[in-house]
Image 1 (tube, rainbow, N blue to C red):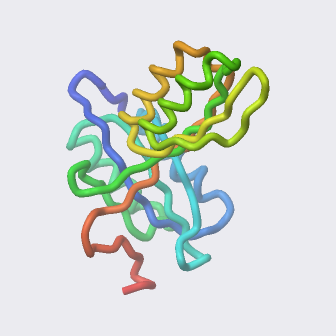
Image 2: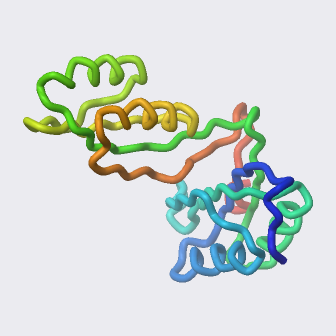
Length: 175
């Protein structure tokens, strides 16, 4: 099944899995076999070191995502799947970016750092390394403005997300 992206939107999917070798490969392989391009992927252990949480951002439509969730539950290593709604979840990512920054550019860069609540991590005679955290739109806006200075190098994490409110995504182990 190839995903037609004309009628697609962005989905953030949280998956609780057994923390063991090969699990990430099995989960990401399922997305690939179903024709999904993974836009963002993060993995980390939970409070229980035997369980990891994978957060995946993909494009699709409701029917595609529903089928994907059903397929994920067929994997033995998957304990819980949650499709997060943007208005009911908190998403963040991290960007590290090295920008050209001679003496004359630093004042303008520092204004951007203040506006975007970024952090300066390193300064040399010719560059500054900045850290920006936030939603995708905030990071895209900052990157757009930094292009005027000259981006030398950048790296960004994938999305991490949690449902808003008191609800907790937990495996049966926590229940």
